[in-house]
Image 1 (cartoon, rainbow, N blue to C red):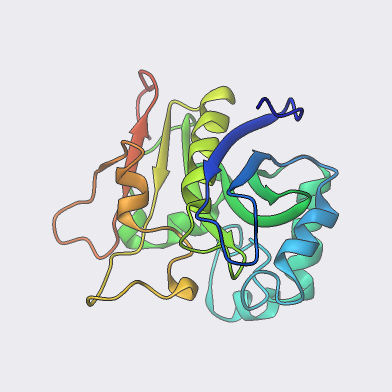
Image 2 (tube, rainbow, N blue to C red; image 1 turned 60 degrees about the vertical axis):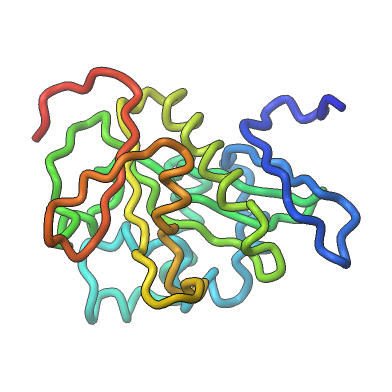
Length: 218
């Protein structure tokens, strides 16, 4: 059945939970009018520990980040969203928001430049997938995959020549706790044909998907 929402950019099948009769979510790109949706999805904790999707946007960690947590981050992110300066995708179950993926030009995330393990050559066409937030009860059901597929299309449509991801490496035999997997896991990116460009001995994984010939790197 064709969905009436003309701006849907991705869709993923979800394993039906016992309390949910529908096995699909819809995914679309963020709009400047979506701040109430973000507040509903992120809740009082701002998704995680007062982050409000600002972790990569604050140039430095430490004391500056501690001061930014909570309401300062919420106000800053609200201003960016309403100004149309945030790129991302939202997942919905009906009208209920259940997931979020943030992407954008790498230059939008100055914190990347301060982490030695993520300092790779890049150019103005380089975009980054910086985080996923999936509501409890919807994790491990394919929502992140649907979001990443939509994010790839959004980045390509916005003129990106390549898209990077920075997944967390698995450790131990069990799944990575959700609180530590907010940048995704390697398999998520590998299934969407990203390839690793991680330097030997690097402490962080870096994955990249190329769309077209890139200009010279910085």
